[in-house]
Image 1 (cartoon, rainbow, N blue to C red):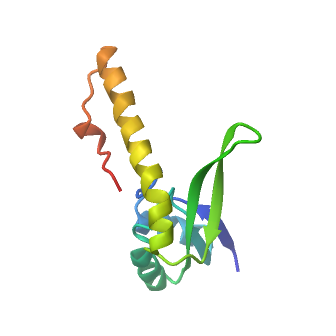
Image 2: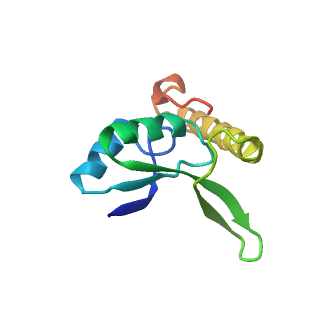
Image 3: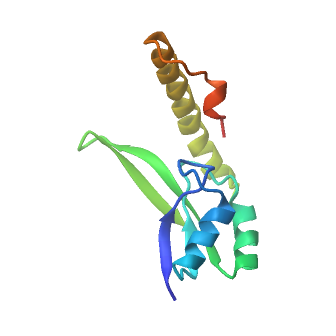
Length: 128
């Protein structure tokens, strides 16, 4: 058995689709793969189903963004064997996702104001 316990897909901040991630896992002889996208369970059910087709056990996970007030820095908390779509997880993560999306939009607007030739639509950033 070979496991990878911290992996993202294009639902989060990785450019690879679940199929591409699974192919990469197979190429590296990974048999158990935890999908731990940032602050969302979106796509986990499909990942589990696709993993079975590929012969890879997909462990439903999440990477929750948090803040360590004692140390004054951002931290990420990994969770494993979570229930995709669980109300408690969704209610915890939705404000985080909305804030990140808003900040991303503001950053893009600053780049446009600085003279960069980009558009929000071209970046293919959509709220989760």
